[in-house]
Image (cartoon, rainbow, N blue to C red):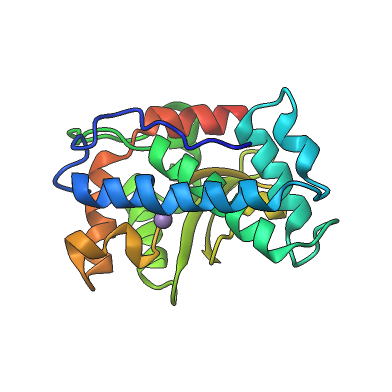
Length: 211
Ligand code: MN
């Protein structure tokens, strides 16, 4: 059985960027539903043993997503892929935020790689926000790394995650309407711009160091 993650901050900690009301629905209703759906799909499936193993939930979810991927996985299963993908994506999404901070930016190797590939942190963030704003329909914009540390920004429709391409997911913005509609209605670009203020870059650097 997979479980709903606990948020590492208070429900109102991300205000005014993400309201406590949005967070309550997003984490307590939407993510809980994906967890319930996946747990109902696992018994008798080729993925059942993975949820009882000693490994971390994140690692088990990543393996399920890779194997259940309808486009090239070893055990293609769209329902399992969509629900496991949405749990993995949301766990990474919620854990990458903390309360609003002044001038929060990456440091160290990640900052150097961003500068080398995108010219500057500001240019990187502008491209990341633009790719999230420009994604048609529901999905996720991702920053991910390959084994050599090379970065790429990708748009993933639906429940997509760069683990299906063998990459390490680092940073993501959820552009499904449920992520922002209560607070921003149709103003997705404004929401994505505001999210920059609450990114916990120390957490993104930890993910990059593990890559
Ligand atoms: Mn979501």
